Image 1 (cartoon, rainbow, N blue to C red):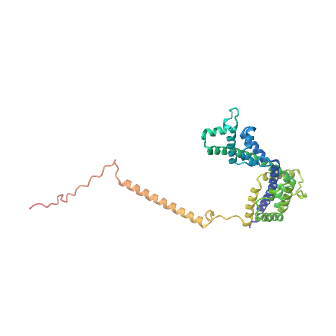
Image 2 (image 1 turned 90 degrees about the vertical axis):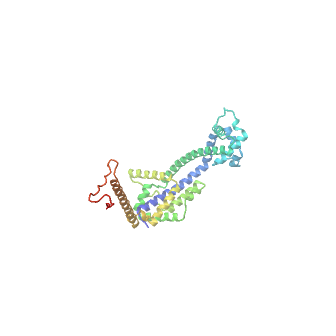
Image 3 (image 1 turned 180 degrees about the horizontal axis):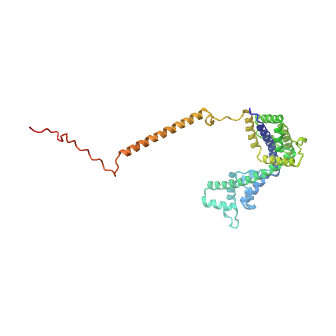
Length: 348
């Protein structure tokens, strides 16, 4: 077990950010549902795709959108690309969009005209083109909604940080100076991870009162040293500056979301429980495996070098022994006069 104060302080801060991010996410979902944010943004985006209200109303009258809208007559929060393409094809057959006068030029008519020009009567290819066009538009809409969510997460996180006095700097200082509180928070975090709860139950709340109650319970279970107690109140201007900076840090960390902080919490708690993961033998510079590998590499290098040197030496010797074109070949040695040149004996 790695009972490092730094690890335990980190666990406390991660727990704080996770709990507040869960509560802030629940509040954002409640606001989004109450204002029908997704449905309103989707309706406005599809209206901009279609181009005018008359075409948009014709699109909503198709059987595809009637099934999506349902009896409550409220625009859906999600529409798939396949449903959009099917609705456009149905509307095109009913209203004959391609026969409309050129004065009614809309983004949808331009897109359909281009698809008909490229693919002709190939309905599958036209539908694929519409689906790609719709998905690209929804990707931009998703980015807009994400930015809206981040702004609200920051604002709600700041309100929560001030409301419960959850200054990241103050919490870190309190945990560092109080070993008992630090260990209690770390043990509570270990219990939370062992339960396998991937996110706070606050995400299932249907009212702000439920979200507030759940957040209070989560903070009490975490045993964090927060709140407007006498010891947590700054006593100087410098102390207040540090406190406000801690609130801003907490709000910024909340925007990362509860799933991110729970995943990090799992890793940090595992590190505290088991210690640092040892290096594998191949990565440990002091292991016999590394030494053997290095020795083998040295031997292989030396063998390659020796082989190359031997081959170079042989090639040099062969080159020196072979006469070159510029040097005449040596004449044959003269015959010895003491020895007869004709081996045939003289006749008697």
